[in-house]
Image 1 (cartoon, rainbow, N blue to C red):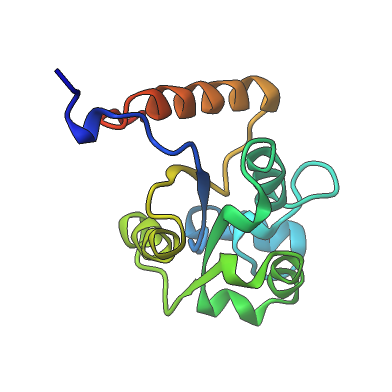
Image 2 (image 1 turned 60 degrees about the horizontal axis):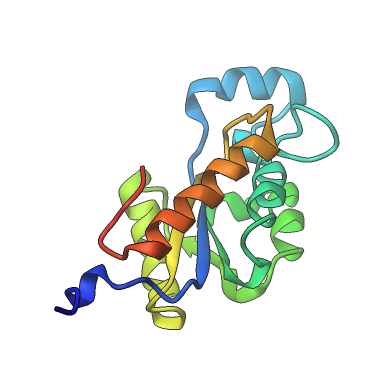
Length: 159
């Protein structure tokens, strides 16, 4: 007996979505004090020379090529030089600009629509851009394991 089509292994194409559309309002006052101006926290360098977003992209690119890593930002973020500079280094087709921040669900549904048009069989990991991960290699080993689980059985989802 053949397995049902939704249980067959997936294609193995890996894509990612990086959520960077938030405004960081909970720590906005802190960011304003340390920078002297407003900027959503994911674009700020808290540790090292890279922003939280750049740390996230660096982590994700251990498993996903840049041309398959979609970043969702809010249009209003483009008023900041730091945001434009960070987005300028990314493949243009991978920057998804939402008209305004509408929170998490629309934040990943919009780039999922873009991604689906190009890679309908892809397995997708979603990465918040404002998380600090101390043990990046260990974290990415877990993401790799999650990809392998889903790739071995297309009816699975790992949260």
